[in-house]
Image (cartoon, rainbow, N blue to C red; front, side, top):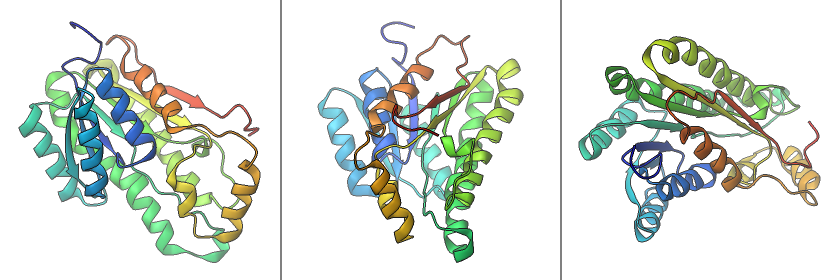
Length: 251
């Protein structure tokens, strides 16, 4: 390809209104990709679109609820209408309302399953037809270190990230060798994002902040650089997993 590895490529990024998704959109756009930014908060998306375009990039903002298959299908349709293709899916949307199992916060469990697993699958289903037809594409699922080990208060969240890891591994087996669709599971440890502020259980939230008040977590830009590395490789290089921890994170 002429120019940068991402020139003339189209990246669809969910959960793009903040954190890792926002950072990934900025870095991929700076790398030459046209980015489609999706999330529920339309005002945040619009501000990000203006920022990217002010820096010389190309962006389309599409307010989207990944828990709605109709909303995700609309996202894919609007992307194809504007750019005629989807080369990369950055499946980043996620929620983390941690609580002990004994609290039986079933509504939070449902929310995590809906966003972290069903939403991820809806997005994959929406982009696959074009990728299969071209025999080209890259699916990046933002998982978590929690997808390798559960932790107290994060049992259901960890289960959703174990699912992301299994889905990523299965996708590679089914899609990479014959259809040339690359698959990457990005697995960060602790990242300084809005997710920790949304933990409803006060004791877990306070314990987290106490543990990390004098440590340095990953920044969203750190994870975005891992995503950029994976998608910038030549077509024959399939970076399957990137596990990335803060230096000061022990487990």
